[in-house]
Length: 439
Image 1 (cartoon, rainbow, N blue to C red):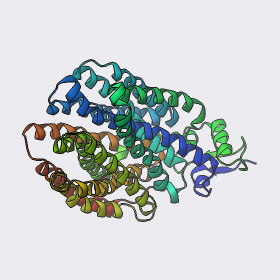
Image 2: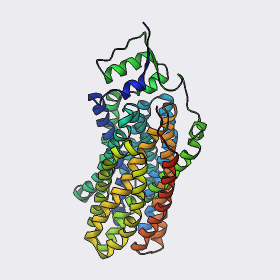
Image 3: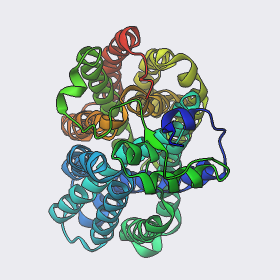
């Protein structure tokens, strides 16, 4: 007898099992290498200044190049995920950024390095929306934000690793080891994903691929009772395809632009701090050690903030994120003053700054997976990450301009805190109109 099986309802009624843990493990590894790669460029900054004899203000375009690539990759490769599958989109993205990160180890000029960082960024940008969609589509609705946020903690964990490589390996192998190590490992992981990463069962059901839908459901729950006579459906019509206007229909007419705005503002501030902290703080005591330590602690604070938010976002939506925006304003503003006057207290403030700025970004990263339906989930996440990268690109570049103006460090961080006020207001407005999609 033929039955109608709604795969979304089936997933929502399941407990987290071995399949989910395995998926979380591999996506965590991918996010870890993403975080490593993005931050490696920032940690190479002080060494480029000393080894290549360049002015620190010249680092801005190189630090922003990968972020501009992420903007392009999020839009282009997010579309690959909705068209050809989340697995394909993720693996292609990983290979792109692995190859070009490895190639950056042989760059001989700042121009070459900037181009290779841009191309690696295209791959990094493609990973984000596809991984968000894949994680969200295998998570029960009650745990969707939690699974996405747990996945993204790999990003901040990975972002702390270049600091260790910088202290232990760069003195003997040069800054090139930062890129060669990340590139080789990412290529190896991408090859492993070909055999270990599942395709989204919601995507397969929406596309009408019955055989693979049954295969994925049985992998998800070996005891599930499904067969070829069953009809597999989602909360969307079969064959639904992405249309750009989906992102602006109904409540999305206001929610999508506001989501883009809070992404752009927070990523601008995060990447300003992430890109310039090692170089700026190192000018205070004349060594790179304190800057490396401050950024590592900043990333650690972000991981703790993301973990603290995971269940709160599932239960309360964006309200906790709005509160974090408000707290981040005075904390970020104080970083520069504390770096020059109270260095040890600055490290504590760096932890709290990471807890708020990066922690709330974890919550924002989970929002597209909760907000948009299956047919446009990867694209919805891709556009949020892509448009958000406009702010991410501006962060290091504007930072370079301000540094070139010889402003005191205390003033730089006060300027950085100001846009967070706008972000808090926009996030508050978003909470009034946003309710996560049932699918």
